Amino acid sequence: MSVQERGSFMHAPFGAWYHASKHALEGWSDCCRLDLKPFGVNVVIIEPGMIKTELGDHAMRSLNETCKGTDYQAIVGKFVKNAAAFADNGSDVSVITNVMSQAINAKHPKRRYMAGASIREMLFVRNWFGDSVFDYLLSMMLK
Image 1 (cartoon, rainbow, N blue to C red):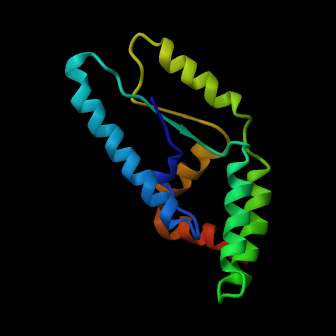
Image 2 (cartoon, rainbow, N blue to C red):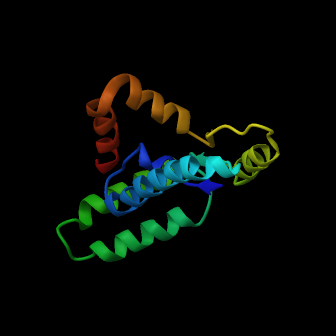
Image 3 (spheres, rainbow, N blue to C red):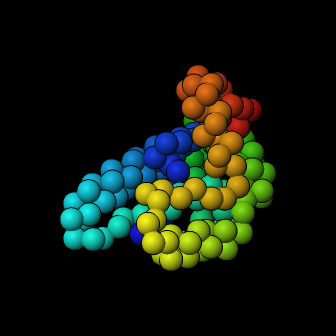
């Protein structure tokens, strides 16, 4: 079982390093699913939306510290403020542990499970309205 944010299909300002790692994990998990299937091993990907954890706070503090005194300082400050408001609406981690339990106990588990705040809405916007609209909405976090 691989738990990875939907970061392989999403992106956000100042998150290139993070989303690149999510693309890598997505591909790795998909390959493992094919490679291990002949041995009866199911590889399942759990894709959380916004979940209330300390990771976001830590990442934002680190981003702020890294950008102090640089040309990015003002725009990062706006992003951190707006991202914090968005993160406050995250789901409790129990949403993900419940989905993990469901996948473990399924006779024929799905390849992917999505759960948590905003994940379906964000994917809907990106899939139906395209990258330019999605990028525009993300850029609003920088204002």
